[in-house]
Length: 390
Ligand code: HMG
Image 1 (cartoon, rainbow, N blue to C red):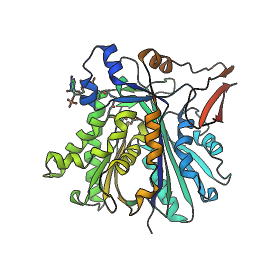
Image 2 (cartoon, rainbow, N blue to C red):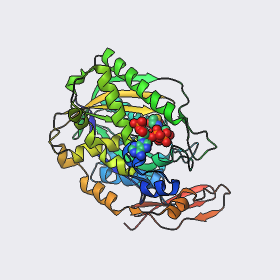
Image 3 (tube, rainbow, N blue to C red):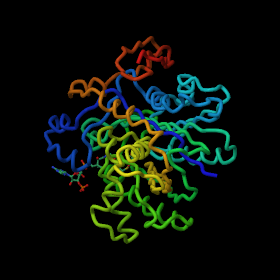
Image 4 (cartoon, protein in one colour):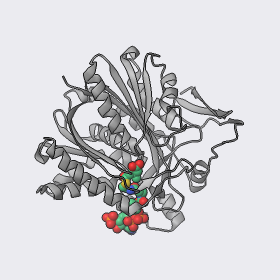
């Protein structure tokens, strides 16, 4: 039985900051961002957008036309939690009008948790092949102003339907794993922005890749030569390029620069303009590969390296299925990216500094999003979500 991704769709917020604006404010050469870290823009959430509205917008095209009673599990992966207790997935469950006979839970391990959700989903489907699992990853990456991480912010959500009818990609069973208790990036409950030891985090990322690959081989995984493409977690797109060079060295692959670049180039396009969307980023990378590759990818094997600071890493593979093109949401994604509004520095600061009320009062939020759902108010400590007219 094949199990894997039946459908995949992403969403990002209504605004973006071009990193040229940040470079001018900080008086540095913009090429440090465009070339040095491989980022051009970063999505910024409007005050009435959050991980719930983005998640529901990503999942809407996936659940439309589905028999909702078959979706018996919703796994919500995020490190941008809006509540210490209630799963953000429960709000999404209502906005999508899913069947009440559904289990919903939120998963957290930095940028890794969506991969864990996919593996759990595959296991559930193997147990009961008639059921489908909706996996949604949604995050808003926020770092302190003027910190090294500031140009690597961004936000986005990706929804994947996992089933025994994987029209997009079969997920193969072997995984390589690596966990180590390290403090490279973390966000204590009392902080709205992450703390990070930037250079150290890149070293731990590469070390984890090495160990996950070794474990993958020990578990009987495919040889490097059996892979056609690689899709990495992308905190910034240069990180994926560095990771791929690292892997090539480790396996002793003798590829030309152009051949090596071709194995990852199409995974980077969307994230260059969205920025870091934490746990969603690697699967927005998969969407980018599927939608931007010039060749038919049917039957091609893609290697995935998922990394979440702290840290947990997993390396696994998937095989793209014949006919996948007919099931992509390319127009939805390209319209979404094209209609985002560019902001100047003052607007970036308004969005960045938008207050997060904690007094239990009535806080209506003006309508700004161009998406299908919005956070309309925070009232008596409750988040009030509604559909928009779009
Ligand atoms: P930095 O230290 O300010 O940058 O920030 P830098 O000085 O290292 O420069 C970056 C690159 O730009 C260098 O290239 C420079 O040479 C180049 P490299 O040596 O790396 O090849 N450069 C230029 N290139 C062209 N023209 C120029 C120019 N100037 C410089 N004029 C840092 C880098 C990664 C530290 C920062 O972006 C950061 O702190 N980011 C946040 C942490 C992060 O993203 N870490 C990645 C690994 S951890 C991870 O992926 C998990 C994460 O997603 C969280 C989670 O799991 O939840 C973060």
